[in-house]
Amino acid sequence: MKPAAATITKSLIDRLNDMDPSADEFKFLLAGVKRDAAKLADADLSAQQCVLGMVACMDKVIPSMHRHHNISIQHAGGLLSYSQALFNYAVSLSRCGFHHDSYGYFKRSYEADRTDLRIIQFACFAAIRSGYFREALEYFCDDLFDYCEDVDRANLLAHEKFCLQPSYDFDDRCFVEMTRQAYDTLNRLAPCNWDLTYEFCPRENGSFHLCLMIKVDNAVDLDQLENEVFDKLESLEGYETMKEFVPMFFVNDSLINLIEAVDKDIENGNIIKPSIEFIKEMDELLDGVVLD
Image (tube, rainbow, N blue to C red; front, side, top):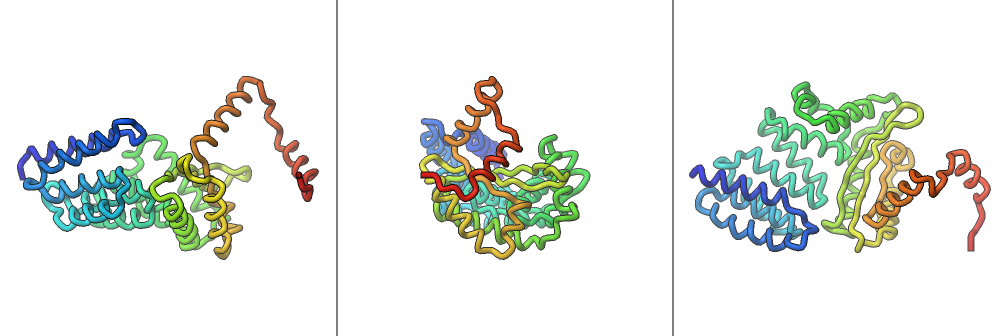
Protein backbone atom coordinates (compact mmCIF):
# COMPACT_ATOMS: atom_id res chain seq x y z
CA MET A 1 0.00 0.00 0.00
CA LYS A 2 1.33 3.43 -0.95
CA PRO A 3 1.99 5.77 1.99
CA ALA A 4 0.12 8.50 0.08
CA ALA A 5 -3.09 6.51 0.41
CA ALA A 6 -2.95 6.76 4.20
CA THR A 7 -2.43 10.53 4.00
CA ILE A 8 -5.31 10.95 1.53
CA THR A 9 -7.65 8.81 3.63
CA LYS A 10 -6.87 10.72 6.83
CA SER A 11 -7.32 14.03 5.02
CA LEU A 12 -10.70 13.00 3.60
CA ILE A 13 -12.00 11.73 6.94
CA ASP A 14 -10.79 14.90 8.69
CA ARG A 15 -12.60 17.01 6.09
CA LEU A 16 -15.81 15.04 6.69
CA ASN A 17 -15.55 15.35 10.46
CA ASP A 18 -15.00 19.12 10.20
CA MET A 19 -18.07 19.72 8.01
CA ASP A 20 -21.14 21.54 9.26
CA PRO A 21 -24.24 19.99 7.65
CA SER A 22 -26.14 23.26 8.15
CA ALA A 23 -23.59 25.31 6.19
CA ASP A 24 -24.56 26.61 2.74
CA GLU A 25 -21.50 25.02 1.15
CA PHE A 26 -22.06 21.60 2.76
CA LYS A 27 -23.25 19.80 -0.39
CA PHE A 28 -20.40 21.30 -2.42
CA LEU A 29 -17.79 20.20 0.13
CA LEU A 30 -19.33 16.74 0.36
CA ALA A 31 -19.16 16.34 -3.43
CA GLY A 32 -15.49 17.34 -3.27
CA VAL A 33 -14.68 14.56 -0.80
CA LYS A 34 -16.58 12.05 -2.92
CA ARG A 35 -14.62 13.14 -6.00
CA ASP A 36 -11.26 12.98 -4.22
CA ALA A 37 -12.05 9.51 -2.84
CA ALA A 38 -11.70 8.19 -6.40
CA LYS A 39 -7.93 8.57 -5.93
CA LEU A 40 -8.03 5.70 -3.42
CA ALA A 41 -9.71 3.16 -5.72
CA ASP A 42 -6.50 1.48 -6.88
CA ALA A 43 -4.52 2.04 -3.68
CA ASP A 44 -6.98 0.65 -1.09
CA LEU A 45 -10.55 -0.33 -1.93
CA SER A 46 -11.55 -0.73 1.71
CA ALA A 47 -10.44 2.82 2.58
CA GLN A 48 -12.16 4.28 -0.46
CA GLN A 49 -15.44 2.50 0.26
CA CYS A 50 -15.28 3.55 3.90
CA VAL A 51 -14.98 7.22 2.90
CA LEU A 52 -17.84 6.83 0.41
CA GLY A 53 -19.91 5.20 3.15
CA MET A 54 -19.27 8.17 5.42
CA VAL A 55 -20.20 10.56 2.61
CA ALA A 56 -23.46 8.67 2.02
CA CYS A 57 -24.16 8.80 5.76
CA MET A 58 -23.74 12.57 5.88
CA ASP A 59 -25.78 12.91 2.68
CA LYS A 60 -28.50 10.72 4.29
CA VAL A 61 -28.48 8.19 1.46
CA ILE A 62 -28.95 5.14 3.64
CA PRO A 63 -28.80 2.29 1.05
CA SER A 64 -25.50 3.62 -0.31
CA MET A 65 -24.13 3.98 3.21
CA HIS A 66 -24.82 0.31 3.96
CA ARG A 67 -23.43 -0.85 0.61
CA HIS A 68 -20.16 1.08 0.76
CA HIS A 69 -19.39 0.18 4.37
CA ASN A 70 -20.10 -3.50 3.78
CA ILE A 71 -17.67 -3.53 0.85
CA SER A 72 -15.12 -1.76 3.06
CA ILE A 73 -15.48 -4.47 5.72
CA GLN A 74 -15.17 -7.26 3.14
CA HIS A 75 -11.88 -5.83 1.81
CA ALA A 76 -10.39 -4.66 5.12
CA GLY A 77 -6.89 -5.62 6.12
CA GLY A 78 -4.80 -3.07 4.27
CA LEU A 79 -4.98 0.58 5.22
CA LEU A 80 -7.99 -0.18 7.41
CA SER A 81 -7.91 -3.11 9.79
CA TYR A 82 -11.02 -5.24 10.15
CA SER A 83 -11.81 -3.65 13.51
CA GLN A 84 -11.42 -0.14 12.05
CA ALA A 85 -13.76 -0.93 9.14
CA LEU A 86 -16.37 -2.23 11.60
CA PHE A 87 -15.87 0.81 13.83
CA ASN A 88 -16.38 3.29 10.99
CA TYR A 89 -19.59 1.55 9.92
CA ALA A 90 -20.82 1.69 13.51
CA VAL A 91 -20.19 5.45 13.64
CA SER A 92 -22.18 6.00 10.43
CA LEU A 93 -25.04 3.85 11.71
CA SER A 94 -25.15 5.86 14.94
CA ARG A 95 -25.20 9.17 13.08
CA CYS A 96 -28.23 7.97 11.11
CA GLY A 97 -30.15 6.87 14.19
CA PHE A 98 -29.61 3.10 13.96
CA HIS A 99 -28.29 2.86 17.50
CA HIS A 100 -28.92 -0.83 18.14
CA ASP A 101 -27.30 -1.89 14.87
CA SER A 102 -24.50 0.53 15.65
CA TYR A 103 -23.82 -1.10 19.01
CA GLY A 104 -23.67 -4.49 17.32
CA TYR A 105 -20.84 -3.29 15.07
CA PHE A 106 -19.04 -1.45 17.88
CA LYS A 107 -19.15 -4.71 19.83
CA ARG A 108 -17.75 -6.69 16.89
CA SER A 109 -15.03 -4.06 16.47
CA TYR A 110 -14.14 -4.41 20.15
CA GLU A 111 -14.05 -8.20 19.87
CA ALA A 112 -11.63 -7.84 16.94
CA ASP A 113 -9.36 -5.45 18.84
CA ARG A 114 -9.70 -5.25 22.63
CA THR A 115 -6.74 -2.87 22.99
CA ASP A 116 -8.02 0.21 21.14
CA LEU A 117 -9.33 2.55 23.85
CA ARG A 118 -11.32 4.62 21.37
CA ILE A 119 -13.23 1.49 20.33
CA ILE A 120 -13.79 0.57 23.98
CA GLN A 121 -15.12 4.04 24.77
CA PHE A 122 -17.51 4.13 21.81
CA ALA A 123 -18.72 0.59 22.48
CA CYS A 124 -19.43 1.43 26.11
CA PHE A 125 -21.45 4.54 25.31
CA ALA A 126 -23.26 2.80 22.44
CA ALA A 127 -24.28 0.06 24.89
CA ILE A 128 -25.77 2.71 27.19
CA ARG A 129 -27.68 4.40 24.35
CA SER A 130 -29.17 1.03 23.39
CA GLY A 131 -30.28 -0.03 26.88
CA TYR A 132 -27.52 -2.58 27.55
CA PHE A 133 -26.80 -0.90 30.86
CA ARG A 134 -25.14 -3.76 32.76
CA GLU A 135 -23.29 -4.94 29.65
CA ALA A 136 -21.76 -1.46 29.38
CA LEU A 137 -20.03 -2.07 32.72
CA GLU A 138 -18.06 -4.91 31.12
CA TYR A 139 -16.06 -2.33 29.13
CA PHE A 140 -14.94 -0.51 32.26
CA CYS A 141 -11.19 -0.59 32.94
CA ASP A 142 -8.59 1.70 34.46
CA ASP A 143 -7.11 2.54 31.07
CA LEU A 144 -10.54 3.65 29.80
CA PHE A 145 -10.98 6.06 32.73
CA ASP A 146 -7.50 7.49 32.07
CA TYR A 147 -8.28 7.83 28.36
CA CYS A 148 -11.62 9.62 28.73
CA GLU A 149 -12.03 13.36 29.12
CA ASP A 150 -13.50 14.63 32.38
CA VAL A 151 -17.10 14.82 31.15
CA ASP A 152 -17.01 11.27 29.77
CA ARG A 153 -15.32 9.98 32.91
CA ALA A 154 -18.07 11.56 35.00
CA ASN A 155 -20.67 9.85 32.81
CA LEU A 156 -19.02 6.48 33.36
CA LEU A 157 -19.01 6.95 37.13
CA ALA A 158 -22.66 8.07 37.09
CA HIS A 159 -23.59 5.06 34.96
CA GLU A 160 -21.98 2.73 37.47
CA LYS A 161 -23.98 4.33 40.29
CA PHE A 162 -27.12 4.10 38.15
CA CYS A 163 -26.72 0.34 37.64
CA LEU A 164 -25.72 -0.41 41.22
CA GLN A 165 -28.46 1.54 42.98
CA PRO A 166 -30.58 -0.86 45.07
CA SER A 167 -33.86 0.17 43.44
CA TYR A 168 -32.59 -0.77 39.97
CA ASP A 169 -33.65 -4.39 39.57
CA PHE A 170 -34.58 -4.54 35.89
CA ASP A 171 -33.54 -7.04 33.28
CA ASP A 172 -31.62 -5.05 30.65
CA ARG A 173 -33.83 -6.59 27.98
CA CYS A 174 -36.64 -4.30 29.17
CA PHE A 175 -34.68 -1.17 28.31
CA VAL A 176 -33.24 -2.68 25.13
CA GLU A 177 -36.80 -3.22 23.89
CA MET A 178 -37.93 0.20 25.11
CA THR A 179 -35.17 2.04 23.26
CA ARG A 180 -35.56 -0.16 20.19
CA GLN A 181 -39.27 0.65 19.95
CA ALA A 182 -38.60 4.36 20.40
CA TYR A 183 -35.75 4.54 17.88
CA ASP A 184 -37.62 2.46 15.29
CA THR A 185 -40.58 4.84 15.55
CA LEU A 186 -38.28 7.85 15.19
CA ASN A 187 -36.56 6.32 12.16
CA ARG A 188 -39.95 5.68 10.57
CA LEU A 189 -41.38 9.15 11.20
CA ALA A 190 -38.25 11.32 11.05
CA PRO A 191 -35.52 9.36 9.23
CA CYS A 192 -32.10 10.97 9.70
CA ASN A 193 -33.76 14.03 11.24
CA TRP A 194 -33.15 13.39 14.92
CA ASP A 195 -30.23 13.30 17.32
CA LEU A 196 -29.82 11.54 20.64
CA THR A 197 -28.00 12.73 23.73
CA TYR A 198 -28.23 11.46 27.29
CA GLU A 199 -27.35 12.56 30.78
CA PHE A 200 -27.35 10.86 34.17
CA CYS A 201 -29.27 13.11 36.55
CA PRO A 202 -29.38 12.80 40.35
CA ARG A 203 -32.78 12.41 41.99
CA GLU A 204 -33.90 13.84 45.32
CA ASN A 205 -33.39 10.50 47.08
CA GLY A 206 -29.76 10.33 45.96
CA SER A 207 -30.32 7.81 43.17
CA PHE A 208 -29.86 8.47 39.45
CA HIS A 209 -32.01 8.36 36.38
CA LEU A 210 -30.89 8.39 32.76
CA CYS A 211 -32.46 11.21 30.76
CA LEU A 212 -32.68 10.57 27.02
CA MET A 213 -32.96 13.78 24.99
CA ILE A 214 -34.31 13.48 21.45
CA LYS A 215 -33.74 16.54 19.28
CA VAL A 216 -35.64 16.64 15.99
CA ASP A 217 -35.61 18.97 13.02
CA ASN A 218 -37.99 21.95 13.20
CA ALA A 219 -39.76 20.62 10.09
CA VAL A 220 -40.90 17.56 12.03
CA ASP A 221 -44.24 17.74 13.90
CA LEU A 222 -42.90 17.48 17.45
CA ASP A 223 -46.26 16.79 19.11
CA GLN A 224 -47.23 14.04 16.67
CA LEU A 225 -43.81 12.42 16.96
CA GLU A 226 -43.87 12.51 20.76
CA ASN A 227 -47.40 11.08 20.89
CA GLU A 228 -46.61 8.20 18.55
CA VAL A 229 -43.44 7.25 20.40
CA PHE A 230 -45.15 7.28 23.80
CA ASP A 231 -48.18 5.39 22.44
CA LYS A 232 -45.78 2.68 21.32
CA LEU A 233 -43.88 2.62 24.62
CA GLU A 234 -46.98 2.57 26.82
CA SER A 235 -47.92 -0.78 25.33
CA LEU A 236 -44.77 -2.32 26.82
CA GLU A 237 -45.13 -4.25 30.04
CA GLY A 238 -43.60 -2.37 32.96
CA TYR A 239 -43.13 0.90 31.06
CA GLU A 240 -44.69 3.01 33.82
CA THR A 241 -41.90 1.89 36.15
CA MET A 242 -39.17 1.95 33.52
CA LYS A 243 -39.80 5.57 32.58
CA GLU A 244 -39.04 6.60 36.16
CA PHE A 245 -35.48 5.38 35.59
CA VAL A 246 -35.12 6.34 31.92
CA PRO A 247 -37.33 9.35 31.08
CA MET A 248 -37.39 10.51 27.48
CA PHE A 249 -37.73 14.15 26.33
CA PHE A 250 -38.34 15.63 22.89
CA VAL A 251 -37.10 19.03 21.75
CA ASN A 252 -36.34 21.04 18.63
CA ASP A 253 -34.43 24.27 18.07
CA SER A 254 -37.56 26.37 18.55
CA LEU A 255 -38.29 24.82 21.92
CA ILE A 256 -34.65 25.08 23.00
CA ASN A 257 -34.59 28.78 22.06
CA LEU A 258 -37.79 29.36 24.05
CA ILE A 259 -36.38 27.59 27.12
CA GLU A 260 -33.16 29.58 26.89
CA ALA A 261 -35.10 32.85 26.57
CA VAL A 262 -37.20 32.04 29.65
CA ASP A 263 -34.10 31.06 31.62
CA LYS A 264 -32.48 34.36 30.64
CA ASP A 265 -35.55 36.30 31.76
CA ILE A 266 -35.52 34.44 35.08
CA GLU A 267 -31.84 35.20 35.51
CA ASN A 268 -32.42 38.90 34.78
CA GLY A 269 -35.35 39.06 37.19
CA ASN A 270 -37.93 39.68 34.47
CA ILE A 271 -39.77 36.49 35.41
CA ILE A 272 -40.18 35.05 38.89
CA LYS A 273 -39.65 31.31 38.83
CA PRO A 274 -42.50 29.57 40.67
CA SER A 275 -41.62 27.33 43.59
CA ILE A 276 -42.20 23.58 43.53
CA GLU A 277 -44.83 24.03 46.26
CA PHE A 278 -46.71 26.58 44.15
CA ILE A 279 -46.68 24.28 41.11
CA LYS A 280 -48.05 21.40 43.21
CA GLU A 281 -50.80 23.60 44.62
CA MET A 282 -51.82 24.72 41.14
CA ASP A 283 -51.88 21.11 39.94
CA GLU A 284 -54.24 20.21 42.78
CA LEU A 285 -56.49 23.22 42.08
CA LEU A 286 -56.69 22.49 38.37
CA ASP A 287 -57.11 18.74 38.75
CA GLY A 288 -60.21 17.78 36.81
CA VAL A 289 -60.82 21.34 35.53
CA VAL A 290 -61.53 21.56 31.80
CA LEU A 291 -60.25 24.78 30.23
CA ASP A 292 -62.12 26.11 27.20
